[in-house]
Structures are given as structure tokens and as C-alpha cells.
Amino acid sequence: MAKLQQLVQAIQSGTIKTELPDVRVGDLVRIGVSIQEGNKQRIQPFEGTVISKHQAGANSTVTVRKSLQGIGVERVFPLYAPCVANLQVLRRAQVSRAKLYYLRSRTGKATRLKEKFETLPQIWMNQNQH
Image (tube, rainbow, N blue to C red):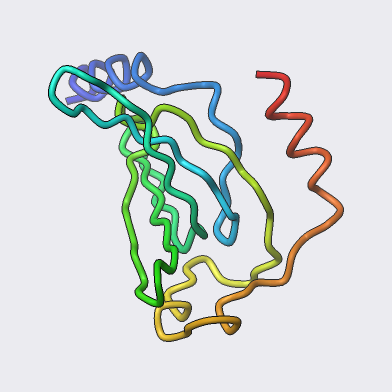
């Protein structure tokens, strides 16, 4: 059984991207999703707040929520999938919960989160280094 686990870890280590920024719950992120339309391929941005993060190695996911014309839209993105072309952290928020599911019942200005100002230059520096 130990050899099987080593084999799975070896396969997963090859699929993990190292250039992704540190994503936390409460961050405002822009994720570029690669979409195939016929013979053309384009990148569609999805911008929203990270309301949950599931860490499972190569199977890690983030749930991103945005409000579109008054309707809440949530998408679950596998972080290391080939369909995720790029990921940018636009703003960090100060949150005290691991999951922000309470934002689902809020609309408008009630969904705003308190911003962290001291770490923004550090985020931008880390993104420019890659």
C-alpha cells in the first residue's frame, strides 16, 4: 500500500503548478478560465470573492462567489487544473472564518469585507516576480 501512495504522490507532484499566488479565504481574485469554442480557445475572466478553500494537494479547489445583476454566482475551481490559465489576487480581506458561507444570504453592500491594507504591496511584489 505504501508503494501505491508513493506512486500517486509522484504523479500528483508533476501536475502541481508552482507559479500560483497564495490564495486565502476572503481574497478578491480574478481567475482566467480557458474555454474552447469550436476551433478557437479564449480565456474568460471570473472575478469574485473566495468563500472557501479545500486543500487536498493536486485536488485543491477554491469556491469563488460574485454577484451578477443582483444574482449570486458561485463557481468551484480546481487550482491545478489545465483549464485555469491564470490567477490574480486583487485584494485581501480581513476575515475571521475559514468558510464565508454567510455571504450567500447577503446582498449589495452587506457583502463587503474589511480590507487588509498592509499586505497589498507584498502581494503585488510576489505576483511580479513570477
